[in-house]
Length: 266
Image (cartoon, rainbow, N blue to C red):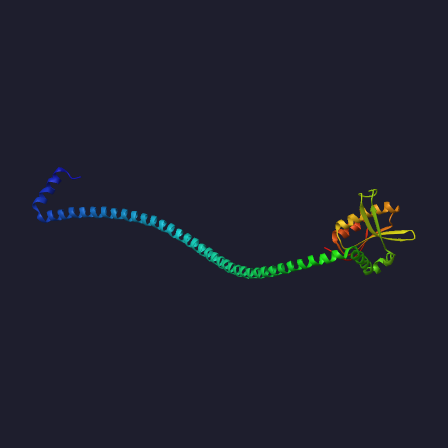
């Protein structure tokens, strides 16, 4: 700290000595410059720190952006793979649809051919129907004699099978009974059955070109009626048929009726 005298001496020297005055002025300007430079340096340092902070923030933002871009790239890659897979599926479906279309066209052609064949068959059936109608008229005119001859023919066809059961076809007779008073069945009903009687053996036989389920049931009922009429129990019931339905065959077996047949029809 300068005294008052020192200050006065400094001022006089500054006023009188130009060289000193210039030196002081230069010194004062240098200090100002140094202060300004110091302040500028501080401001620049603060600016650098701020910019560095901004760059750090920008780096973080860019890292986030790059991370998002990487995620989006993966998603796009996955989507591309999915689209490629879907494209393959669509192509396969297109091929299948094309194959189905061709198959439908082929089936349509086949159906058209079948329709024509069915039309032809229908026409032939109509013609056959007319022929059958004419045949029925002829058969009807042959009457009962034809039926009797047919039964005899069927028995002869299965002679060997019947003989193994102890029955000779020539000894089989037609049994006919008309229940005039309705004593055993409905009044006026006619009961017909083939019968084989030898010594003490009685066998009732039903002859059919084709035996159906209702034929089996009726034969059993009819046999019961005949047994009452003749006053003795039949030792055996036999159905002789060219063909017999499967359900009729199984029912006959269940009822204990023997079956002699050429074929069992499903």
